[in-house]
Length: 344
Image (cartoon, rainbow, N blue to C red; front, side, top):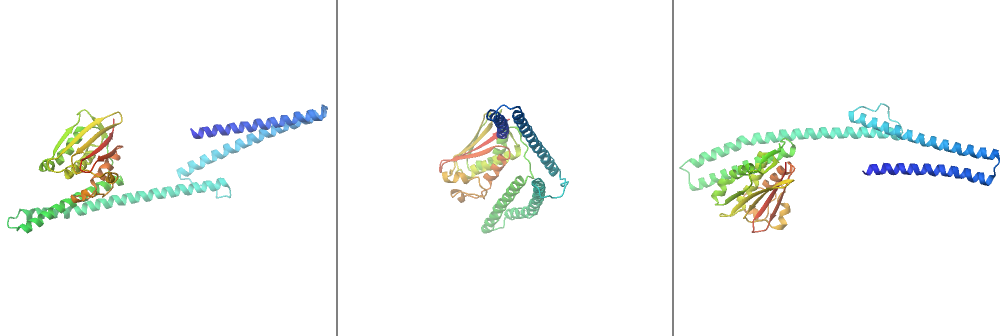
């Protein structure tokens, strides 16, 4: 729209100058006729001058338009050639057009080299992530297996059992951390592409609830799901379930025994909203803007086990699907995490 107005303004200015030129020429001819008399020779000379000036003005205007048209056509050919990788047909010359052509070629070459470099780095990152995942999986599995075998031996002392339990606990924590980092790295590097399609929201929610049910039951935390079975939203079912699991796991972790968690869903024309409310320890207002940052943990949260990656991973999964996530909380009064998924 702005460019169209500029073109119209340019045409108006060109027309105004043309009209001004014609007016000046005719005005000069009329003034010369009035002041110089009506001699036939003088009138013919004045008329010849006016006609010559009008022809020259028209020729100059046509020549200028032709030059601009030729310049634009040349620029169009240059850009097409540069995009397709064709080298300049003529060597560098000390002209503005030649300089522009070679600079454009240089810019496109640099952009292509940068793109290839980024692609190479992306492939290297994929290999590194795969190597880390593969190289750590077997040793960690062995540590967990051996610690489990030690825990099953009846002749161990209380101190031995305590140390074995600590090994198991820290091994599980390390396994979860490595798994989360690998998932996050794969999402950020583009190794994994989320497939969003119309899925039942209650189905996704129930899958996430099932994963935290045992832990919630051990703390006597009740989980209430209030979601219409007909509500649907565009989302990747497994990965959105992963995001919901991370949020529910946090709710269970930071809610005291005997507390409650409520999950509600509602939809409008643009988004489906999923609210996860808990009666936990809450989050101070000055920490709310930081909780979705990587590895961030609030002051109160540091008393509990965790590394501060669950909320960051959840937000990453939701935003990659075109949604967003918000949080509302008061210290000591629980937290409400809201997920907004695109509508159908």
